[in-house]
Length: 117
Image (cartoon, rainbow, N blue to C red; front, side, top):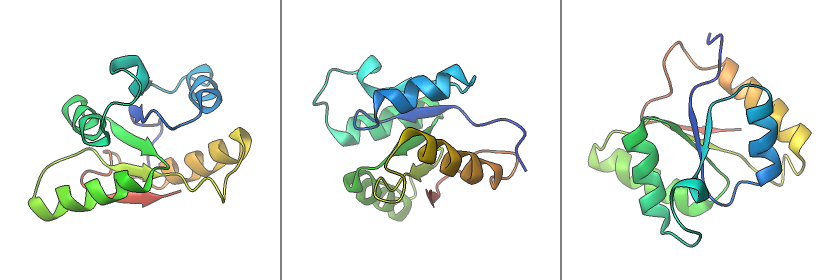
């Protein structure tokens, strides 16, 4: 089990309040809109997360499709944590889900895997 969370790349659709809360708790989170302008294609964000070796945090179903394509093509990425916003509509609930999800990781990030939180 991991003792600390992996480095995350939050796509631009992840709420700013969640990113701020995670950062305040000491998580290493880069937000997509801090790296690329709003409206940047999802494939660019996915590629950036892979390049930076950060686990992508998203609730965008387009990211799921991209992850499946990358898996099928044998392209490496650090993992995708898909946060179901219907299940976790508020920041507190999302943090609980992420903590549980991250605790289940082995020592290294979930390379090339899709994890549902």
